[in-house]
Figure 1: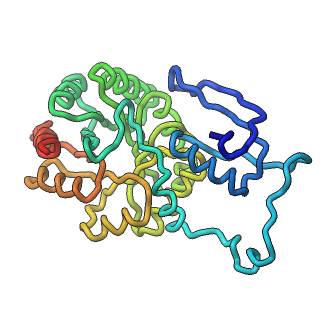
Figure 2 (figure 1 turned 180 degrees about the horizontal axis):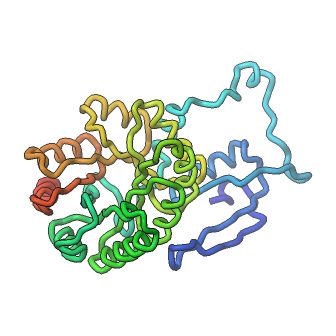
Figure 3 (figure 1 turned 90 degrees about the vertical axis):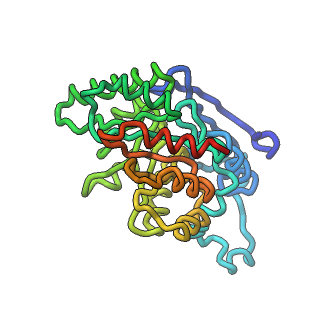
Length: 313
């Protein structure tokens, strides 16, 4: 890929990714100017096949000529950075598909995640995972950090990971702080961000530096949502999806999709009687996955009904 853009690689190193067995991260040095047309084109192509990419720096070299701009280009203000909305629109065609465990988000097979309201006692987590698998779900989500006991939290993380793997499911939990994110990223497949007051920026930065896919709930405004997404992407993590927790109206949903390349998931309530048809309509509008909040009375029945409707076609 670099060769096709006449870029010389001068160094290549690999390092194991902690928590991801048999996966490695590569550090690459190239002889090129990061602002050159060739380098920017290569970075866009790399973005299509990587889950994490970050420029660590650019330093002068006696052998690489600096990129020079004409007086005309300077007078036209070509150095003005594009808006956050423009960057998201421009990246629409270069976004790598979101990979959650072994599942890849697509319109043909939307991702289905079951969100347990509390850590299960009766029935057991194993029974919940078995039902989820039988009813067509792919992601088992449970709150691992509800207890203030650090040892118990770690036990929940380990139990969730092992149980999900036993049934070939991906595992997810909600994280509120950078410390929780770091611990969860060592065990689970995908993380749902829910920052506590005063630590939002810290959590977004940590999410951008981790190697796990993350779900970012929509903020109060489109501008804030895109700015927070950009903060994560700028740190390197390209495995990011937006989660609609606000039940946006269809016109708002379509407008959001026009402004960003990021995949969109929707959170639904299990007790909604119109859940299957609502899910189908959202799928047709471009939503690539659903997080279903279950209640104790209905169990996995709502997810089963939704899966049957989504995969009917």
